[in-house]
Image 1 (spheres, rainbow, N blue to C red):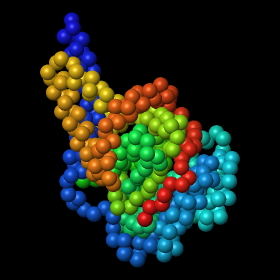
Image 2 (image 1 turned 180 degrees about the horizontal axis):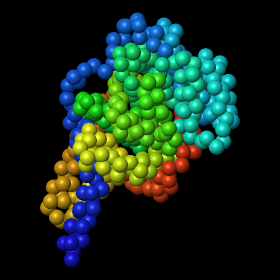
Image 3 (image 1 turned 90 degrees about the horizontal axis):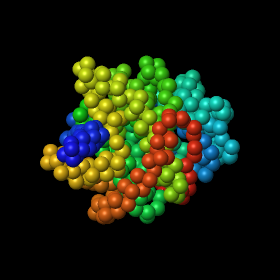
Image 4 (image 1 turned 30 degrees about the vertical axis):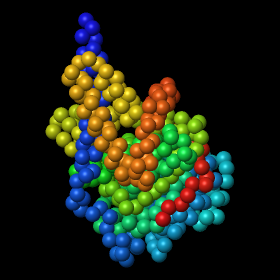
Length: 400
C-alpha cells in the first residue's frame, strides 16, 4: 500500500511538471543554436523610416511615468516622420492625459467603466490608429523606456514583410531585495531565453504584453479580441492557431521596472500567474487536440500554456526527488538539471552573471513566498480583466 502511494504521488508530480520540463528543455537547448536568419532588418535602410507606424500606449492612472515613456519614444523616433505616438488615457482619474500631451504625445481619452482592462484600451487604440492611416501598431506600456534603435528596427522588420514582432522585454529589479532580483532573473528566462529558443526553431516567438507590433494586415486577418488578464498570451495563442508567426527582435529593448513594494509584487504576480492558470484551463485541450491531429508545431505552445510557474515546478520536483521510487527520482533529478541549465542561460543573458548566480542561495525563500501567493493566484485565475495599476518606482533609469 505504501509503495502504491509513493508511486501515485510520483506519477502525479510527473504529470504536473512534465510540460514545464519539456518547455524548458526545448527552448533552452534551442537558444544555443546559431541564428539562421537575422530577424532585425538593416537599421540604415532609409525607406523603413517612412513605414507608417503608430505607437499605442495604454495608460491607466500613469501620471508619474507616462511623460518619461513618451520622451524615450521621441528619442527613438529620431528622423522618422511616419510615426505617431498615441496615448490611450483609459478610465483615468489623474493627470495622465495632461502629462502625456505636454511630453509631445497625441492623447485619446477613453472613458468606459464597463470596459475595464488593458485589452479594451488596446482594441480602442488600434482602431483609432488604423483609421488614421497607420500600417502597423506598436504597443509600449506607459511605465517603460525603449532603446534608441527600437522604433526604426520595428519599422524595418515590418517593412521587410514580418506581420508581427516582439522586442526584447526586460523587467528590471527596482530594489536590492533578493525576491525582486530573482523575479527579474525569472522574467529574463521567460522574456528572452524562451523567445530566442522559439525563433531558432522557426516557431512563433510569443507576445509579452509590452514591445510588440502588429500590422494592419494581421489585425484584419486575426482581429484583436483579447480581453483577459493575460491578453497578450490569449492573442498569441489565437495567432498560432491561425498559423501566424511573431518574430523576436532581441537587439531592440523595451524595459520596465518591477514593483518597488512587497504589496505591488504580490498584486502583480497574483494577477499574472492567476491569468496564466485561467489560460491553461481554456487553451490546453484545444491545443492538445490540434497536436494529436498532426499539427506538431503547436506542441511548444501547448507545453508553454500547460506548464506550472517555475517556482512551483521546482518545489514539486524537490518533493519528487525524496520519493523512494528510482524512476521518479531519476526523472526529478534530470528535470532539476534542466531547470538549472535554463537558469544559467537566463543569468548569462543579463548583466553581473556571477552576482546573479549568488542570488540562487535565496531561492528557497523565494519559493516559500510564491507558495504563500497561491490563494491570491487562485482568485486571480477567474479570468476577470479589471485593470489595477501596480505601483512602481518613478525614478527607474533610462536605457540607451
